[in-house]
Length: 137
Image (tube, rainbow, N blue to C red; front, side, top):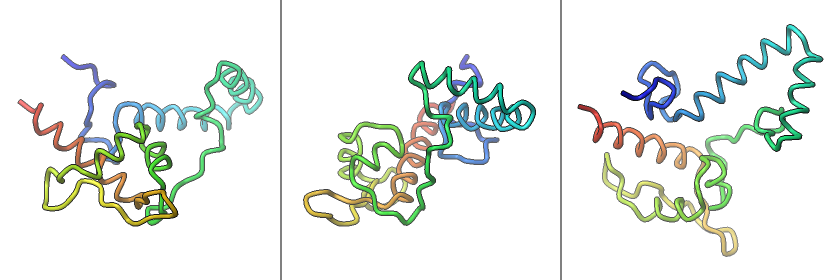
């Protein structure tokens, strides 16, 4: 049996493209926000400790990326936490649910291939749905 926190897909979760790490991160940030309202000094101390240990994902430095933003291969990979090679592979794969490529290329900026952020997120969601369909009893 798979533990709840390790499930690839959670049908009750409001963001279907989130995997276990994304869900854990969002919940941890919610707890952090509540703790910060209760005791801001303790939260700052905990953040400093985590930063010394090399963990900075919870700090307020992340910028939201608009769905229509053009991303390079490296930026697209960072957005969904995969290797750039994976992004290039997705651009060559057929979409599992409809005709066309899993991740359409948007264009070029110099030598860099560009993708649209919404398409990158949609590719992840499609792959998760396809994986879930294959593993569902």
